[in-house]
Length: 182
Image 1: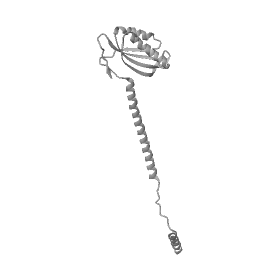
Image 2 (image 1 turned 135 degrees about the vertical axis):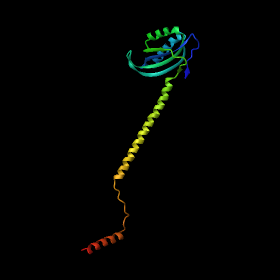
Image 3 (image 1 turned 30 degrees about the vertical axis):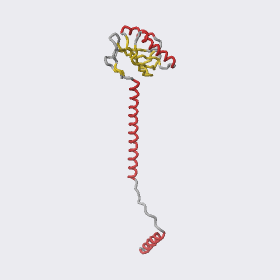
Image 4 (image 1 turned 180 degrees about the vertical axis):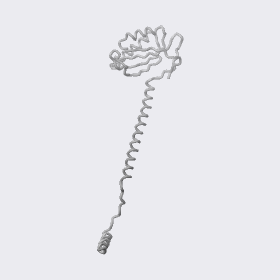
């Protein structure tokens, strides 16, 4: 993070957001960026920072484009030269839209790309947490179902196998008991 402070009273720091079409070949995109930065160089502006946000969807089509590349520039320049740069950006064929803002005193530049990467990591960990919680809940449901199934099932105790001699004795006893009752 860098704090914006003008180097003298004759110049001010301006933030300039520039939108240009997304679906361009790399060579044409580089040419547009060079042209935009050239407008600032012509008036003697000094680039303080540049933050390329990349491709963004537009709320409504601009000159037929539904997506645009967004770049945020921070320039230190003479306020009298601002109109000249603004006019050049207005008539530039490659620029869809632009916006100049004068940041407040002691404004700190936060690179969007850096904060976006950090947000992705945090979001990823939140997604992983949700996935883990879903898996734990599913495992608990499966375990509860298995416990219910076991509780409703009648389990008969298993008997040890009986040898042939013992079996013969038991059968004889049953037969004799049945004959005695007759």
